[in-house]
Image (cartoon, rainbow, N blue to C red; front, side, top):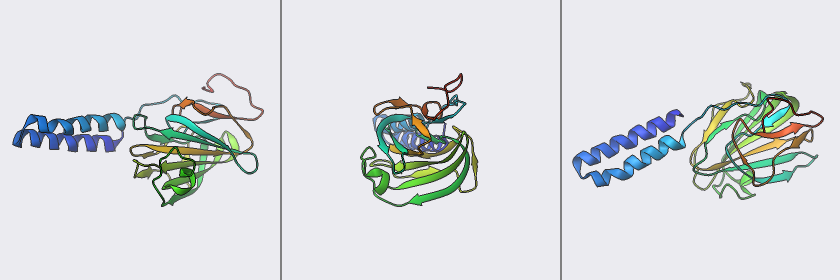
Length: 212
């Protein structure tokens, strides 16, 4: 579990216990329910990371957009609802060449304009697992999500599937892939962060451990 979940859970439970003691048990129940939800929301399960020439999903959720990019690449957008795991992971292994935070709006995260206009954090990763040039991943805030946590900075090394941060309470993750990648998901697919294959390098064949 993410540390934030423990802090929220303990704080809300303590508030509930105090209200129970000072007033009435029924008034304390919403605090205990919120504490339980926070413990659930901030869960952080271990994942089996696919090996081979693949990029993995940076987040749990549903693929809501796949867009062509100038030069032949693709942008894959994943929407996270309140019940998804909100820990974000690196789609490839390599080194972070840029880390940039952009202040912005809080449009509903599934909308197309959210990729440009919303509050977001962008990591540019020079990939060496697999060696494939540059891959960009965005953590995008939404209508409910108001805080983006990124644990990586420029110069940091990351492994494929490694945790890179968290978006609190509903959000979106975008991955920008170059023309050397074949996207292997479709709009409407449900994916799991770190364990679902998002794309495969062109010319590479599937093998054991590549994930799906």
